[in-house]
Image 1: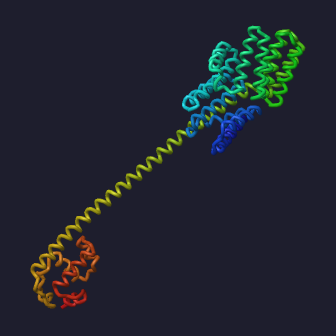
Image 2 (image 1 turned 180 degrees about the vertical axis):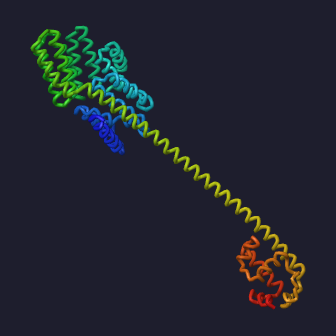
Image 3 (image 1 turned 45 degrees about the vertical axis):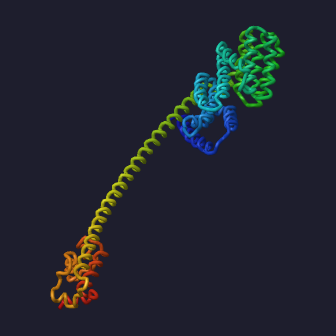
Amino acid sequence: MTKYSTTHTFFLGFTLWLSTVAYSQPESYQQLEQKVYLLNNQLKYNESQALLLPILQDDKFSADEKYQASLLLSYTYKRVYDYQSALKLLKTAQKFAEQTPNKALYIANIQSEEAFILFDTHDYQKADRLMATLEKSGFKYVNLENKSKLIMQQGYLLFAKKQYKQAEETYDRAIGWMQASAPCHLPMIYVKKMQLYNAMNRADLLADALKKSSFYADSCKIIKYHLYAYEELREIYKAKNDLPNLVQTQKKLDSLNVIFAREQNISSLHNQKESIVSDYANQKLQNEKTSKDYLAILLAGLALIALALLSWLVTSRRKQRRLEAEFLRMKLELETYLARNRTAVLNRNSLERGDLNVLSERQQEVLEYMAMGMPNKAIADKLCISENTVKYHIKNIYLLLDIKDRKEFLVSVKK
């Protein structure tokens, strides 16, 4: 395993944990945007992605949160000049935006960002169409920062038509709005002014624009804007065949590129993205498997409970039927006894005389077991009746045979 992959694996696990902790409490879009902005300024693109990508993978987040994460992640890829991935993420953001109540606002933001990327990739025709759509609505839903960027692009189109005076005025208007909303992004406008002043042969104004661009890039610690400015300056010197300045500018660019490491950053982001997506997919499959296992155990447990309940119900019903039958038999015996013996009273020696025909069949069975010396519970088990029923029969036996208690009964039996 390479040093990169080992470090990457550790970092991935840590950042996944960190992102989970970070989202244990709701976080506003502004707070999240600020975190991503600072991480990107520090060239910590992997940390930025590790903060955002889990939101897109986890179903617990809302469509609003997924839209915001997609949009911010597109900013991260745009920072490393991976415009293709940035555009894909804007499409993802639009999918989530359409599921929210803020659809119109979110789509206006997405269209603005898409216009910026198309402009950066020199697809001016498509960028102009998007800007025209937004301008037709009076830039409704477009915030001041994005409005200044769109105005800057209009200024560049005027510059391309060599309408330099109008282009400068438009750039200055964009600078005013950007100064009021997001001054850290002023370098992008000043670089455009560098192009303009070069075309106007105003070296003094060009140098001043470069100075202002460098000031804001340094103040906000955005190395991308230094690269942007010096890449433009290189093209200017190349067109003029100014070799001394071209060499110096190229050296500056080389040192900036070492720090920025554009290709390495893009590769690292994509590798990390694949790992995070794969980890979440595997975790989702594991969760689904665990859920199915728990469901199977639950169903098996419920089935056993149902069988136990059914068995108990069947047993209880059988017992109830036996008790009902026994009650009817006792009732019949009592009625028979009352009919035969309303006025007759048997004497104490009835048992000695063998006068047992007054007893019912069940009472004779009970009597037989009593004579064996069996306790009430044993008699109940033998006859499959309740102990209370046995006591009832014994009470009637004592009454019919004129016996006071079991002791007297046992004495009579011995005789």
